[in-house]
Image (cartoon, rainbow, N blue to C red; front, side, top):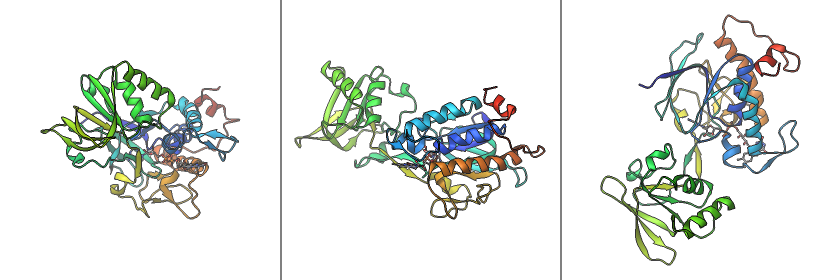
Length: 344
Ligand code: FAD
């Protein structure tokens, strides 16, 4: 078993609410580790609408989805949280008691955490890749087909077929190009949703014959035990094979409640019911904050999640420091809070 990472709080999900939870916990001396299946922080804000303006964040007349994520990252930096990206929290086991909660949490990347409290800030669930409609693709998953790049080294010296026309496809075309034997980008049309800068860089590489671009759609895959080729229907209807050792389809992401359904939490329509004083689930020590929770009057807004994170942290303090008294303090006037923030 891998080394156990011990922490006061384990936060499932690095969306805006998971990030702000680090701040509220940090003010109370509760150290946190965050896990997210995405390769970056920000949840829906960063993944679904990074450039769109948000108009209802208190104190910000307008800020973009990525803007609020960047600000949150700056705001929580003094607390030095641990970030674990590209990891799906799979299992959660209760190892303490109701009075002295403790949890063992494991990810699909074999990381194991022991935490005094868990904050489930899982939003609409974990972002998971949409699979392309290619016959028999399941059989090649883990045998050449992957939907995310966990380790770039795995693609060194390989012929890599990247499928898609968005930013993820282009980011990996450009990142893997220096180490792969050959990159082949395939898209069904010669128009892309990716950033124009990335599209220009790809076109330059194709013009210099350093990679290939194919117009078409994969219809089936071939290989004995491992992927060896994709059968493709070209734009003009011709069918041909593209030899490849690896295939990375980027067809967007969908949100699924995922493993949370198996953690023993009461669920109502895939949401975690909580009380509105502590935002705690039916399991003492497990909190649910942000879009993943439900209670009478719930609004799926970022500002609601921020409030929930503050109240959940107060109860978490009682579990992490059962013998200490909780003092209510303002950041404006408390020198002790300002020290924690590194501003005094
Ligand atoms: P999310 O942002 O969904 O983040 C949850 C994170 O948890 C995800 O990154 C997910 O990958 C991760 N996760 C889940 N399960 C696991 C697991 N098992 N293991 C690892 N990781 C996991 N709100 C506003 O207040 N104002 C607006 O103007 C506004 N505009 C919006 C516009 C759009 C287009 C959309 C889609 C939403 C908008 N929202 C807006 C809603 C707002 O984005 C959400 O309320 C907010 O993102 C919820 O934050 P969260 O941290 O709870 O969840």
